[in-house]
Length: 470
Ligand SMILES: [Fe+2]
Figure 1: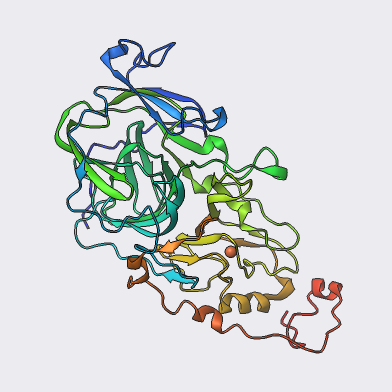
Figure 2 (figure 1 turned 90 degrees about the vertical axis):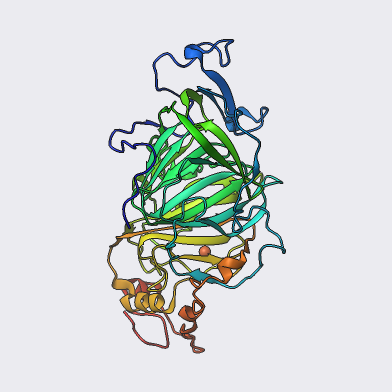
């Protein structure tokens, strides 16, 4: 498909970003545009309007309080009434119940989604796969995917329901926000917080990816505990756009607002990207996953995947996440006398996985870039038969091994997801997924084998009916 470059020019090589996570930032597209000493003076510099966007209640504790002040040519309120968007979008869900989604404990896997032949932009290419809770009640999440081929034209999207964490898998995203512009390439992720208006251009044409949406909370960096003061995602690697605005008239510009999972549209005569300066700590941002500093076992056993948490959206229960974003990046495996792939597992949390590129260590085949899997609460999962047998065959002599060409990720939640009908009925559904485990054989022997731990460590004894698989 021909490359799409419609929309505002996007100087990808000249984009400037601010650095940090949770900072109080400030940015001016014109020097002197930010008021000094107060937030909403009677007359703002350059004749701008002041407007606050609140990402937390006014009275949230200071460490959780998020808000920014935007200084714009015209305020956001300057538009005609919202009306249900025509056509309606039938595949977005933010309140999950029996009327719109299905509970199933079955292991689910999807092949990569087809990118539509018809002209489809980011908003219309977005569809909910699964989720739990309710955006109305400010508790829950939705997992969406998108497949699109066309830039948004003369419209901006605004999500009143929650924060988007977007994980592009194919095709760059050129995202214009009220705080400025972001280029987000596969291998990077972006957070677009609740309420910000944004437009997505697709410079590479056919594009695909994953979106986690969280209701009623925001992403934080995980605590590092005994790891110490450094490691995992470093605050300075999070990048925030710098102020950019357009002032020309944009006749019949449309604001598309997602509110309770439904789309509404309002017309206005100007671009919403008319913020000349802003300051605050409620901002869109992006992060390059290659910057992640992974920690791992250096002696025995496969560590719990929480060690690779990039961002976490907490609940009120300590250590229990509404949604964790966890990655499985390239890294060294060095554990001794250890089954190195992920262990077989049943989890009180629910695990949705995607693959950005390469392969995934627990699946020899079938889990493809652009595909997805869902292992819900207490549903068993783990390495497929090929992976298990190949791992055992390597025995204890396996030396240090670097996993390369991979970037898998997981959205993990304490809430049990319901699955949308179009996801269950999709022709991308891998109905044979269960067969990847069916071949797992019994290696049980009733006669105890006298195994000295030293022999196992030396690779003299493998598991199984007396066979030395080393
Ligand atoms: Fe698991």
